Image 1 (tube, helix red, strand yellow):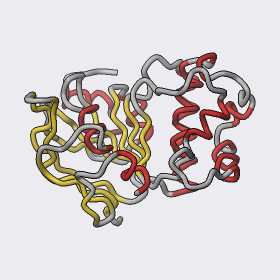
Image 2: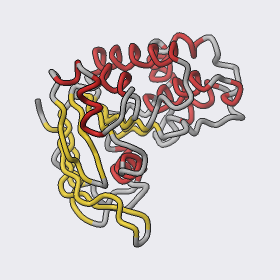
Image 3: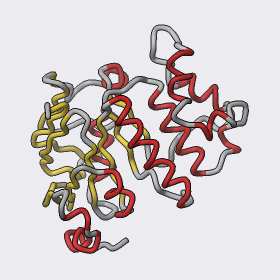
Length: 237
């Protein structure tokens, strides 16, 4: 498959505190890549650096052959990178439909057609369009955050800890939705998560991150055995 994203020696951190110590990986077009690690190992820092919310202090981020290392978040969104942050960060006082419209805020012209197309993949949200975002359950808010991201028409999605505080039946719905999304659009995704079952249900490959570096890659064959995956990082489902 064609390399959509190349990350080469990426370093980042907070002030003088280094977190990423030189991360290297590639993401192919249409690939779902999982990144697994304990809290504090650099997962969210990696996602925020890829999106431009944290500046890279070394290395390169190359999207479709173009160096976007220093690009701002709005420029990366315009280039086709979507972002669903940890904690979802929907607009609680806006309706579901208004939240979806905010996903098109950076576009020159709002497209009802795009929003309607996204909603076909989220039947649960279609029944809640007039409800305030803050009145939704945690799982419904995660679906809304994902749908809002898709309204930007990304080529790849950065998805940060999506299972936090969500009931199992909604998690199953999110897995099914993401698989269907890939079938329909060929979108790529980088998913950072601690839930092994969720990660293995979605990912083509798993990368293990420890202390700011990628230490291992888990093959598709090994992903069938969560206990063996857990041995890489000492965590269990």
